[in-house]
Length: 177
Image 1 (cartoon, rainbow, N blue to C red):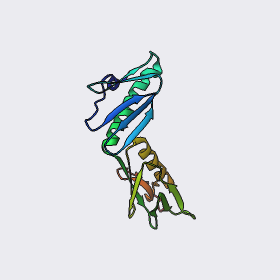
Image 2 (image 1 turned 45 degrees about the vertical axis):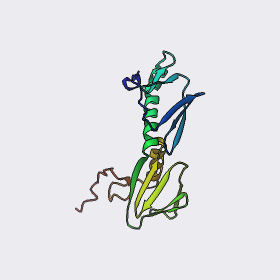
Image 3 (image 1 turned 90 degrees about the vertical axis):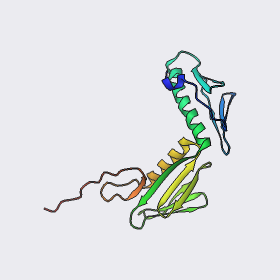
Image 4 (image 1 turned 120 degrees about the horizontal axis):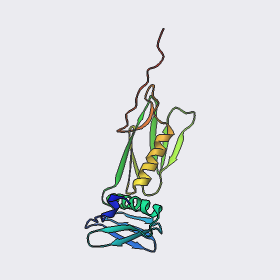
């Protein structure tokens, strides 16, 4: 069992956590997140925080305690301050624009690439910088990965969509003999 799951997860004053009918609900000032709780997990809300324990002595139940503790910490952090990913578009003639709830990319293909923005996520575009924000850590990371997958950075010229903190290891091109 995870060492972090053995300790109760502290709940800030502005956040309320409830568990009812196998559904975990974390409510903050602006956002509310819900997640289905696995049947092998018990959650008790006490004065010091939320205590997560396995319902039985199986290996899966012990593994899920750490997983759900991590999910709960992420949900609590997300309702307080939204998660944020920043992507940068590099390349001559590469453009991105936001029309309603859709990103439209011009990235060197013969066609435009359209990507729908999912519910619960806000996207802002300033020149060639795309910022993805939202309370759900998994949704923000998944959507940022989908956007990066439109045109991943290539190692020779560095053209493509990359995370702002990503380092592209450049390869040397052909040498003249």
